[in-house]
Length: 302
Image (cartoon, rainbow, N blue to C red; front, side):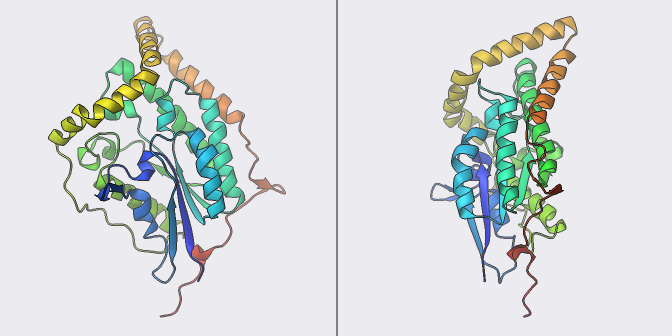
């Protein structure tokens, strides 16, 4: 029987950071989801192409060709947070890259999975003037992902809001990546969407972790060791611009014109989306649909 192929593209979230399985290896939500995509008699080939620190440009230039060569039946593309943490952030470029990546898989009939994500400033607990510009950027990315996901017929998971964002038990010590429980919850939520769509036919991933929830002590230890280096690397790239953005935030706040910043961001998102290929998936005037694959084969009689 032909195996079901699942490719996962993205950054550290999809790579699995926060969900260690020993030997210096990570598992993550995508690997957990892969185990529940098909019934027991259908083999699943899973390829995780995600890399820590990846931006939309890395997904387009490096991960997309490898994924297309793999010819997946199901593919996840969850990326964009790292774009918001760079001084080169450009929502029009982000939209164009995602449109190309989504369209490439739609053209081949793969089932596409996407997600919107919380903003890193809120997760890190940054002061308001520093957090708001990052939040505005993440909202812009999420808006683009929402529209393009619908346009390309993706199975989309809304993971940017809800009680889970503030639930410490779902996050690893670094407060930026899910812990085991968080990865399991993401896998279960994706599985529920795919099952409702008639795509996933295997058992749903369990949501209870095997390991303990990270403690506050562990979070402080991460910040004092690995976290210091992480912050320093991001500050070198982003901090000068973030300080300028924060100063602009304060000025507008004092003048009572803060809404202009939101309007400016909304206009940038609208311009970015209008520049993408709205009709890229239309063939002969109709939207193309995923091919029938091993996902839709009937159960073999036992």
